[in-house]
Length: 239
Image: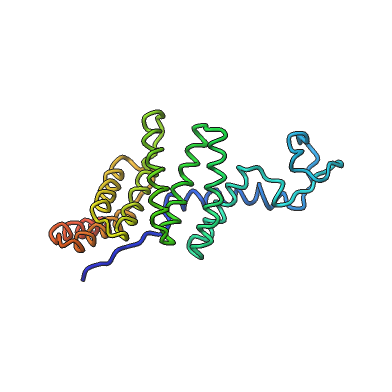
């Protein structure tokens, strides 16, 4: 029996970073501020644009008390909660986070901000792919890859996780467009990226990756290559 194509859900790396940050973001930046009084160590002048009561204490609302960074992180966290529940809401909130992170990066292009911007860009590209906005996903992920190449030539930071996720998702996108040449190229690039010392274990991703490569070769009539890819998938499944 030939296994069909495996459409990946949001990349495991992106999911893990979202969940890890969510509890901190919500407890410290949102819920702890609603209805709370802030009257100590507070720079009122810097927060003047967000204030509507300057008498002794501040009252916060969701729309005006948060910095752009806080809002971007909260949107990312909300998207993370929805990714396995409602993919359209997943896309909605990840897109909001992406646009705010883009604004932050363009305003203050620090290494730290660029790294986070690129990680959210990957999540956004994956979200677009999940809801089958294939061309938009390809455009975002191609832009991401251009950033990664530029960063690799300037900084000594590890972007292999992002590169792996981007190539893997691009391979899926091209497959659904029946562009099998580029799909194969992206899947092979993802496999090569996985050998660069990824921070997280990706056995499940590699199982799906080789399964998809096997199905691609089966679709194009390259049965020997298809068999080899499926056997490689089974090797990872046995780990």
